[in-house]
Length: 166
Length: 119
Image (tube, each protein chain N blue to C red):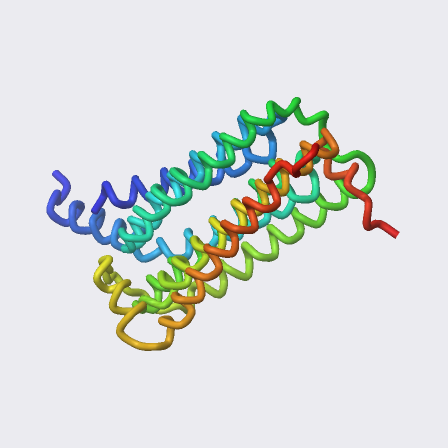
């Protein structure tokens, strides 16, 4: 119980700090590693929120597969370091608007979440599978994602392929 | 001597209250990470970093889905996270393929230099 609370709040703080590091780093490779830390601490939060299956998926799919793909491309292209922030108006406007958005969304979330019901139900992968497949509500969407993945795969190969004669 | 039993019970119940606050804290973290990702998309110049900021925003949304799923005791939020995972994987694959094509043809990854469609 106490360990739960320590883990959750620790993971939340690590997520906040490493999330900030993602945009504070100059080089993309440091951002990628910060993002991996963010994803792993979010996985801890998922587990503490009672959805262990999503936590496992977060580590395996996001931190494992997608971020390795990112790191692979960064190292393949050997990009030079980011020369700094976007100058002038757009950068400053983004930061100012971001701070306003942060404050107002935190206030709205904090006030609104007080009216939410409280549940302590742990869910397993079997529950997720039952929700996905036992009714046709999500079944067609699930089948559609297979077509999405297939077309994304074909599209990625076509876009990244070297053209003949070049 | 203080009543250790009462102290223990009150500590335990305060942790129970903290446990109840998980959803609230998760939603606040989610809002913060989403805003950080939004700022990153506008501030960073490297295309790959911009894409990583988009992934950060998707992750923040996933956290909100899981938190609401927990609050309402239903499974739908987690199923939506499942779909977000799939779409994020497809998006990363196609986006990184475009980045590789850009690097091959323009030898530059600065978002400000991609203005072919700008009026």
